[in-house]
Length: 221
Ligand SMILES: Nc1ncnc2c1ncn2[C@@H]1O[C@H](COP(=O)(O)OP(=O)(O)O)[C@@H](O)[C@H]1O
Ligand SMILES: [Mg+2]
Image (tube, rainbow, N blue to C red; front, top):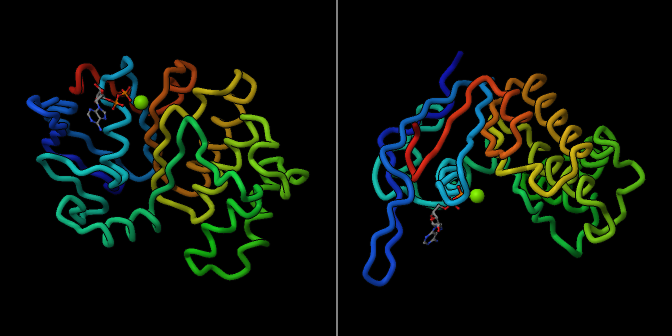
């Protein structure tokens, strides 16, 4: 399998007034194309920080990150957001849909930003595939948690990213919706030759990935 992502000796520290908090220490990780990885660990162990680093939303204090053999740790904001926009879809526990945009607008906006033709048609296609045909014109506040997460996933995969980063994607959902969301994610990975890195407390979900990584006190063990 081709190499998609490589983290080498990554450290992440936060400086407070007179303290240095070591959030991630000596993280080494390789993810190949089509590989699925779950990240498990106690609250506060550094899982979200790791997702943010991989997504280029946070800067490492030291170490290197390569995405498709391009080092992203020495890129500027514009270059990183360019790579992220084209290649990485991010799904969070708390959806983060734009509250005054309809389900359809939330998804088509991503296509418009990327100057894709027929954004509305393509957004409708994917929402329909996720069982949301009757929900195109609803605002997020008018949708259930499971529906909102399906819209959020539609938005994150509509550009066909090579990597999906999911931070507790089913953390706010009941078991029925959790199963639906995991099916959607794994169907995408299988049909589009993409990779998945997913933080989850759900053992059922974690056991479906090819690789399981445990983080404790900022270290992989
Ligand atoms: N911006 C920040 N400034 C200072 N400390 C932070 C910041 N973000 C996260 N932390 C700390 O980093 C540690 C790991 O947080 P996080 O990555 O959110 O853990 P997890 O997702 O595993 O619960 C925690 O101790 C948290 O308090
Ligand atoms: Mg977290």
